[in-house]
Amino acid sequence: MKNTTTMKTIYPTVKFLLFILILSLFSCTKGGGDNGTDNASATYYYKATIGSVNYYQDVTQTNNYIAGSGLGGVDDVDLTAGIEPMSTTPGSTEFHVTKGILHNYLSLTNAQFKAFFKPGSYPNTSGPDYDPYQNGDGIYIYWVDKQGKIWSTTDGSGDQTGSSFKIISVDDDGDGVHYYIRVKMQFNCKLYKEGTGEMIQLTNGEMVGLFGQI
Image 1 (tube, rainbow, N blue to C red):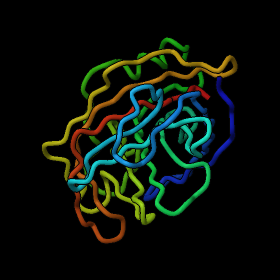
Image 2 (cartoon, one colour; image 1 turned 45 degrees about the horizontal axis):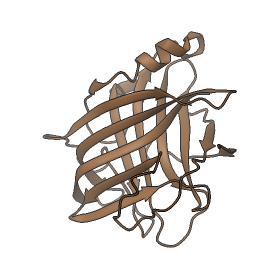
Image 3 (cartoon, rainbow, N blue to C red; image 1 turned 180 degrees about the vertical axis):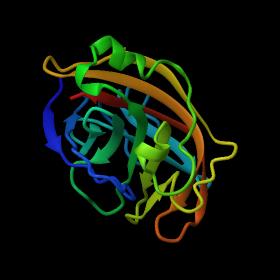
């Protein structure tokens, strides 16, 4: 069972105008939470070791978390999948993966959209201050910690030497109105704190999220 909710997502440090639609889905799974303990039955989740601390967050119908899908741009777009709370609560975290740039978005078939996420390795965007029209071919990751601080792959120096990102699997997961794909991703990267540039290492990252042709 899936319920649809319209949400808004904020993309930090983006320097261009965005037209953003977020369509958010609930998965009918149970259990889990941001406590480092995996729920084997979860459909959508993220997990990672960040600064030697294990994080895990899944999406259920009752835990206030959603699997969000968003895009930025018009015909040349970047696409985002997120695990995020429906409302901000103390101690909650967020995790987002953005992939760009997908060209000719307005005329794409479902098959062409899905092919943009074919399994394989992809580079991280390089350099600080993410701008998809300059350095958007690749992966951009950002995480909001329990104190509400934003960490991303493109704040600070933006150096991603030694980082990796792989798409493991892609499956259709539509809601009968819009075309969605469920994507499993694995990654290691460096996250930089917004405003200070402090670096923290992310290892053993994994996420199953939704990307939508919305």
